[in-house]
Length: 363
Ligand code: EPU
Image: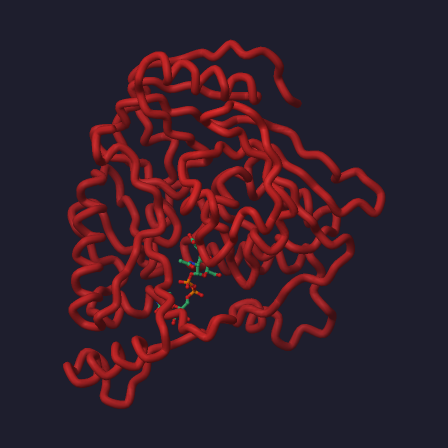
């Protein structure tokens, strides 16, 4: 249900930690929830008048907020509404940016729509998924996004961007590269496959279904992904500190094969890995090698559960940094730095963080 009216309730000094899955971060100087496009515009006008920066908040699942908080307006996108699910033979489904992603996936799989079932269980909102081209278990959102409705921050007008205008690549898009900060995503339209078969390319999924006599349904694939994610601490299970994370903390580095060879030789000759050991590689369509950051972290000498104060590497997956309870952003940053430094020293490979950092330059 979409609300009408442009009146925006602006609060002051609102702690941000409860709005992030890492549960870390100081207060927002100003904070408001936008439930329709006019309220988004009202927020932008308020920030302009006040001369302060704006940060657009979705589900807070990919964020590291500074201990000092954010000195501008945090605008939480709560636009709601899903269209197209009831259409007979319809395959274009659109969802407002504030819809919870996993609830949207569940509704689509319940309607037997294929294309996003492997992205079950990802925390966050619909509006965040195009930004870093969220993907998991063999699917990427950019493969099924038909178009993205955006509000241009400078003109305050709405625009529909086609899939190709969004420039989707591994964990990148127009929205976190060339046009960073220019648009606010208000709605995403997906092209799904009614009655389509689930995508089961990822090894973990093939293992899960190995030996099963009947072909898995879309719903079976969703169930499998949820179980696999849970085993890796990549779902939000209340009370489990291993799940208090921002998902994968680093991107998997994509390098040319020569760089991967060089990293291997360096690690072998220094005795970091055995002289006959190899770095796992996944060849991309463009002929580059994607290296598992989790493997590099472990083989650089970090063990699951390694900690800096209350910040730690998850005990279930080496790519997730977790808040064991009461961690400060500074501790997460220190742990991040230690990992980057040691992986660089041991392999000559740079690890780049995946989350967005908020409030670190005291904007
Ligand atoms: N590995 C380890 N230790 C671990 C976990 C993994 O060494 O604790 C190594 C293994 O060699 C394994 C490889 O890393 O084969 C890949 O592991 P996994 O299948 O768990 O995937 P990932 O590369 O670590 C990526 C995404 C996840 C997504 C999964 C499944 C990135 C940065 N992360 O993780 O996305 O769920 O694949 O598709 O691309 C996220 O972005 O927040 C996220 C959770």
